[in-house]
Length: 627
Ligand SMILES: Cc1cc2nc3c(=O)[nH]c(=O)nc-3n(C[C@H](O)[C@H](O)[C@H](O)COP(=O)(O)OP(=O)(O)OC[C@H]3O[C@@H](n4cnc5c(N)ncnc54)[C@H](O)[C@@H]3O)c2cc1C
Image (cartoon, rainbow, N blue to C red; front, side, top):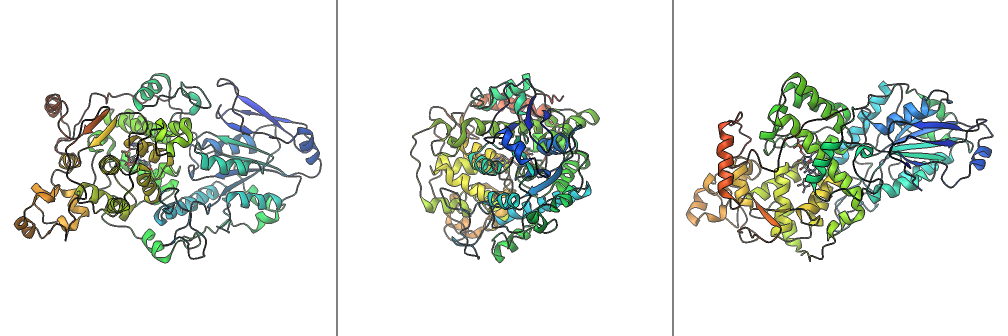
């Protein structure tokens, strides 16, 4: 049972029985919203009885996929500072653990992997859940985490049997200890049902446990909405943004806690299973069930990709340092963010954020520092604004639960989606005949990354042009994205499909291509067959006649596909707005562009397309407000 703090404005305390100690009250200060499972259904007297023999006090910090870091990690801080090293309490053994869950990792070409274990699959389309590239990113993150922990005097325990679920592993582990041990579990709270189910199964095995809020830029407790359900969280982003920016401040990031020690060794003396666990080994991709081909794919960096991504907190902090300080790119973010080629047009923080290698509050703090030390402008705020989108989708997922994964989305729409596998395959393989869609989809398949501009276009194309069930798109992204984050992915997809009740942006792909890839540099980068197609036709090759196709070495239907659906003109259905079509309020649009051009500090920016609007009415700027 998960018990939330009774009041937002009061710290909570709970008791737990220990050897010869009647009770110890632990003041919970780091997050008012820690979800606590104290002695759960066990009675205090039973626990006291249990503690009457020789007892070891172990605090297990269970790192999960969303918090693989030490800096600004509220859950880990709590485990060390409030449980292990709290003044006036008996010191406890700190045991940091990470488990590779076989329900998440594993590949294999067919339905079964090499060891004949069914590889975990997504629900609707049956894709492998984690592509080998992302699995490698996690392996690197775990290696880095262990090194950092070791540097601070602790270590990281990783089960050597990668076929064991966390439930099985912890069950065995706790069974291997003294039955009188008092074992506490601390971990970061997650909001989606799959993660919650596993956590609740694991937590039941412990004498006491606590789920601590982390991962968002704004703390859950600071929001102006009702906890725990967030019933009054707005269903669209803009009112959320206005309310949060008006009423809340971003808390300062926490520093790495002091006082970690190698209590792992002490604990192993009393636990036979712990003794057999590895402080050094980490499973390989092969051990996680990926095929040799997949392993090679994961380890090869495609030089056409935006940049190589290596998992781990160390690489994450290096990227922040590089993007903000060394390359001094933050001041131009607003103008470059819609680019598609290279490392510099946007931050590329997402793979690290998705795995919790990087704290959003740390990024906000660096942006604030940059404003104080270098320059403050719309760009310096805009990165924090984008992080607010990330927060929003996590809170949105918390509010809406499993409806976020339903075909009818959070509005329970009865729209009948089509499913035509051939179209989905053309979309996945980048053979739709629409160069912008194809280039982006090939980039994704080859690297695990796609720009935000690309993601919006390919999502609009699949759901609003092909009318395919949006979950096929979301699940494909879930499988292959390096930065897959369940809330941002399903939130963005559900919203792109018009299933959240917000404004629906139907993108005119050709117009978007011309606006954001004026010279066709991006589509040629990923579609070699369009290499010699003149710029005039590069975004609509179907307009070439036979002679022009011959001249361009690009015969339609042979070298490059004919479009799988008729090139469209946007339709203005009620409640939907077409993006990048140039039709809505054209005069106003041109007027804004002229005005912006007068004051264009970065008009030579090659990442900006011809028609890229620098500003939009709804995009008012704000400021970074930190405690
Ligand atoms: C259909 C679709 C699916 C997406 N799936 C994911 C996903 O699985 N994981 C993910 O991290 N992002 C997802 N996004 C959001 C966005 O495209 C990526 O965060 C961004 O492209 C990552 O590049 P960046 O770090 O350079 O972003 P930047 O432009 O530098 O932005 C900085 C950070 O802000 C956050 N952010 C920016 N835009 C969004 C957004 N629309 N929603 C949520 N957070 C945002 C990200 O954490 C990002 O790293 C998705 C967007 C769409 C349209």
